[in-house]
Length: 99
Image 1 (cartoon, rainbow, N blue to C red):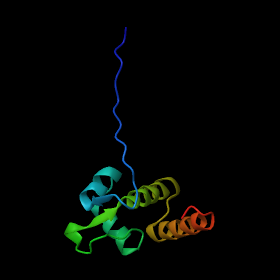
Image 2 (image 1 turned 90 degrees about the vertical axis):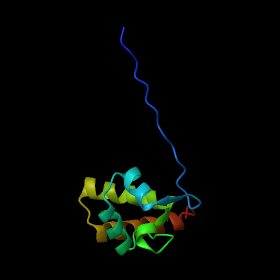
Image 3 (image 1 turned 45 degrees about the horizontal axis):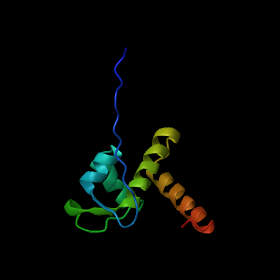
């Protein structure tokens, strides 16, 4: 007989009501803090608080970060291209009533 491994998954609702710190974004998305700073510079995500060491983000920013990471990893898209792609996806979702 073989032992069964138990995996535990954590789920979190990523919405506009949820706030996360810069450190949490880095940990949950598995990225470097510098990438988050660059995403803020390109307007991909916006902090809720404007003082950098204390940045907080809405939960939907986590989804945007993970989308950018996938675009970079899978398609080799740079940050300006990712910003454009996200804007186009936002427009498409808004026109479909999913905004």
